[in-house]
Amino acid sequence: MFTGIVKEIGQVETFLKRGTAATLGIRSKTVSLETSASDSVAINGACLTVTEKKNDLLFFDTVESTLEKTNLAKLKKGDFVNVEPALKVGDKLGGHFVLGHVDTTARLRRVIKKSTYWQLEVELPAKVRTHIVENGSLTLEGISLTIKKIYPRYFTLDIIPFTCGHTNIKYKKPGDRLNIEFDYLLKKLEAEKRG
Image (cartoon, rainbow, N blue to C red):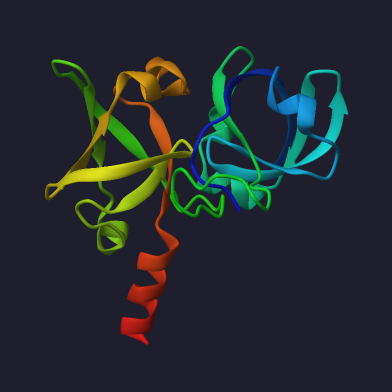
Protein backbone atom coordinates (compact mmCIF):
# COMPACT_ATOMS: atom_id res chain seq x y z
CA MET A 1 0.00 0.00 0.00
CA PHE A 2 1.24 3.48 -0.96
CA THR A 3 -0.07 7.04 -0.95
CA GLY A 4 1.30 8.46 -4.19
CA ILE A 5 3.67 10.82 -2.36
CA VAL A 6 7.01 10.31 -4.13
CA LYS A 7 9.93 10.12 -1.70
CA GLU A 8 12.73 10.67 -4.21
CA ILE A 9 13.80 10.56 -7.82
CA GLY A 10 15.94 7.48 -8.40
CA GLN A 11 18.06 6.67 -11.44
CA VAL A 12 18.23 3.49 -13.48
CA GLU A 13 21.64 1.87 -13.13
CA THR A 14 20.92 -1.45 -14.83
CA PHE A 15 18.12 -3.03 -16.86
CA LEU A 16 18.80 -6.63 -17.76
CA LYS A 17 16.20 -8.46 -19.86
CA ARG A 18 15.96 -12.24 -19.51
CA GLY A 19 13.37 -13.64 -21.89
CA THR A 20 10.01 -12.16 -20.87
CA ALA A 21 11.32 -10.96 -17.48
CA ALA A 22 13.89 -8.39 -16.41
CA THR A 23 16.00 -7.28 -13.46
CA LEU A 24 15.98 -3.59 -12.71
CA GLY A 25 18.68 -1.81 -10.67
CA ILE A 26 17.75 1.61 -9.26
CA ARG A 27 20.17 3.97 -7.53
CA SER A 28 18.40 5.48 -4.51
CA LYS A 29 20.05 7.76 -1.97
CA THR A 30 17.10 8.19 0.43
CA VAL A 31 14.74 5.20 0.17
CA SER A 32 17.65 2.73 0.15
CA LEU A 33 18.62 3.83 3.68
CA GLU A 34 15.39 2.40 5.11
CA THR A 35 14.92 -0.50 2.71
CA SER A 36 15.87 -4.18 2.90
CA ALA A 37 15.47 -7.18 0.62
CA SER A 38 11.81 -8.32 0.49
CA ASP A 39 10.43 -4.80 1.05
CA SER A 40 7.86 -3.37 -1.37
CA VAL A 41 8.81 -0.19 -3.22
CA ALA A 42 6.85 1.64 -5.92
CA ILE A 43 8.88 2.50 -9.03
CA ASN A 44 6.94 4.90 -11.28
CA GLY A 45 3.87 3.71 -9.39
CA ALA A 46 4.44 -0.03 -9.93
CA CYS A 47 4.77 -2.05 -6.71
CA LEU A 48 7.95 -4.13 -6.90
CA THR A 49 9.79 -6.32 -4.38
CA VAL A 50 13.38 -5.51 -3.49
CA THR A 51 15.29 -8.72 -4.30
CA GLU A 52 18.75 -7.42 -3.41
CA LYS A 53 20.37 -4.31 -1.97
CA LYS A 54 23.98 -3.22 -2.52
CA ASN A 55 24.69 0.06 -0.73
CA ASP A 56 22.42 2.59 -2.47
CA LEU A 57 21.50 0.25 -5.32
CA LEU A 58 18.14 -1.55 -5.13
CA PHE A 59 17.38 -4.51 -7.41
CA PHE A 60 13.93 -5.64 -8.52
CA ASP A 61 12.79 -8.60 -10.63
CA THR A 62 9.93 -7.84 -13.00
CA VAL A 63 7.74 -10.36 -14.79
CA GLU A 64 6.06 -10.29 -18.19
CA SER A 65 2.68 -8.96 -17.01
CA THR A 66 4.33 -6.02 -15.21
CA LEU A 67 6.45 -5.17 -18.23
CA GLU A 68 3.40 -5.32 -20.53
CA LYS A 69 1.18 -3.09 -18.35
CA THR A 70 3.74 -0.45 -17.40
CA ASN A 71 6.42 1.71 -18.97
CA LEU A 72 9.18 -0.13 -17.07
CA ALA A 73 10.14 -2.17 -20.16
CA LYS A 74 11.19 1.09 -21.88
CA LEU A 75 13.63 2.09 -19.13
CA LYS A 76 17.32 2.42 -19.88
CA LYS A 77 20.43 3.30 -17.91
CA GLY A 78 20.33 6.91 -16.74
CA ASP A 79 16.53 7.30 -16.82
CA PHE A 80 14.91 8.94 -13.81
CA VAL A 81 12.15 7.15 -11.89
CA ASN A 82 9.84 8.04 -9.02
CA VAL A 83 10.51 6.02 -5.86
CA GLU A 84 8.10 5.57 -2.94
CA PRO A 85 8.54 3.10 -0.06
CA ALA A 86 5.51 1.15 1.15
CA LEU A 87 3.27 2.83 3.70
CA LYS A 88 4.02 2.02 7.34
CA VAL A 89 1.49 2.04 10.17
CA GLY A 90 1.46 5.57 11.60
CA ASP A 91 2.71 7.27 8.39
CA LYS A 92 0.95 10.41 7.18
CA LEU A 93 -1.64 9.83 4.45
CA GLY A 94 -0.83 12.80 2.25
CA GLY A 95 -2.13 11.52 -1.10
CA HIS A 96 -4.73 8.77 -1.53
CA PHE A 97 -4.68 4.99 -1.07
CA VAL A 98 -2.60 3.49 -3.89
CA LEU A 99 -2.05 -0.24 -4.45
CA GLY A 100 0.89 0.02 -6.84
CA HIS A 101 -1.04 -2.01 -9.44
CA VAL A 102 -0.65 0.02 -12.63
CA ASP A 103 -3.78 -0.24 -14.80
CA THR A 104 -2.38 1.02 -18.07
CA THR A 105 -0.06 3.50 -19.72
CA ALA A 106 -1.19 6.58 -21.59
CA ARG A 107 0.60 9.00 -23.88
CA LEU A 108 1.47 12.50 -22.71
CA ARG A 109 -0.03 14.83 -25.34
CA ARG A 110 1.11 18.26 -24.19
CA VAL A 111 2.72 20.14 -21.32
CA ILE A 112 1.31 23.66 -21.04
CA LYS A 113 3.09 26.28 -18.95
CA LYS A 114 0.62 28.36 -16.97
CA SER A 115 1.51 31.39 -14.85
CA THR A 116 2.64 29.49 -11.73
CA TYR A 117 2.14 25.83 -12.64
CA TRP A 118 2.07 23.33 -15.51
CA GLN A 119 -0.91 21.57 -17.04
CA LEU A 120 -0.54 18.10 -18.54
CA GLU A 121 -2.79 16.75 -21.26
CA VAL A 122 -2.86 12.94 -21.11
CA GLU A 123 -4.57 10.68 -23.65
CA LEU A 124 -7.63 8.87 -22.32
CA PRO A 125 -7.88 5.30 -23.66
CA ALA A 126 -11.53 4.48 -24.40
CA LYS A 127 -11.42 1.22 -22.39
CA VAL A 128 -10.72 3.12 -19.15
CA ARG A 129 -12.95 6.17 -19.65
CA THR A 130 -15.32 5.02 -16.90
CA HIS A 131 -12.46 4.88 -14.37
CA ILE A 132 -12.11 8.63 -14.00
CA VAL A 133 -14.18 11.56 -12.76
CA GLU A 134 -13.38 15.24 -12.62
CA ASN A 135 -11.79 16.15 -9.27
CA GLY A 136 -11.15 12.46 -8.66
CA SER A 137 -7.77 10.95 -7.85
CA LEU A 138 -5.35 8.86 -9.86
CA THR A 139 -1.64 8.21 -9.85
CA LEU A 140 0.51 9.21 -12.79
CA GLU A 141 4.04 7.76 -12.62
CA GLY A 142 3.19 6.98 -8.98
CA ILE A 143 2.25 10.58 -8.14
CA SER A 144 -1.11 11.17 -6.45
CA LEU A 145 -2.89 13.78 -8.58
CA THR A 146 -6.35 15.27 -9.06
CA ILE A 147 -8.08 15.11 -12.44
CA LYS A 148 -8.83 18.64 -13.55
CA LYS A 149 -10.98 18.24 -16.67
CA ILE A 150 -12.09 15.36 -18.90
CA TYR A 151 -12.39 15.77 -22.67
CA PRO A 152 -13.48 13.17 -25.26
CA ARG A 153 -9.91 11.99 -26.01
CA TYR A 154 -7.81 13.23 -23.09
CA PHE A 155 -7.85 14.60 -19.56
CA THR A 156 -5.88 17.33 -17.82
CA LEU A 157 -3.92 17.49 -14.58
CA ASP A 158 -2.35 20.52 -12.93
CA ILE A 159 1.21 20.17 -11.60
CA ILE A 160 2.49 22.63 -8.98
CA PRO A 161 6.18 23.63 -9.02
CA PHE A 162 7.01 21.51 -5.93
CA THR A 163 5.63 18.35 -7.54
CA CYS A 164 7.38 19.11 -10.81
CA GLY A 165 10.68 19.70 -9.04
CA HIS A 166 10.53 16.60 -6.82
CA THR A 167 9.36 13.98 -9.33
CA ASN A 168 10.39 12.69 -12.75
CA ILE A 169 7.56 14.70 -14.38
CA LYS A 170 10.13 17.43 -15.08
CA TYR A 171 11.86 15.03 -17.50
CA LYS A 172 8.74 13.97 -19.41
CA LYS A 173 8.06 15.10 -22.97
CA PRO A 174 5.04 14.85 -25.29
CA GLY A 175 4.85 11.32 -26.67
CA ASP A 176 6.18 9.65 -23.50
CA ARG A 177 4.11 6.80 -22.07
CA LEU A 178 3.09 7.34 -18.42
CA ASN A 179 2.00 4.74 -15.86
CA ILE A 180 -1.53 5.24 -14.55
CA GLU A 181 -3.31 3.63 -11.61
CA PHE A 182 -6.94 4.65 -11.32
CA ASP A 183 -8.59 5.13 -7.94
CA TYR A 184 -9.42 1.72 -6.45
CA LEU A 185 -12.66 2.87 -4.79
CA LEU A 186 -14.00 4.21 -8.09
CA LYS A 187 -13.07 0.98 -9.90
CA LYS A 188 -14.77 -1.07 -7.15
CA LEU A 189 -17.93 1.03 -7.38
CA GLU A 190 -17.94 0.61 -11.16
CA ALA A 191 -17.53 -3.18 -10.81
CA GLU A 192 -20.43 -3.34 -8.31
CA LYS A 193 -22.66 -1.41 -10.72
CA ARG A 194 -21.90 -3.91 -13.48
CA GLY A 195 -22.42 -6.58 -10.99
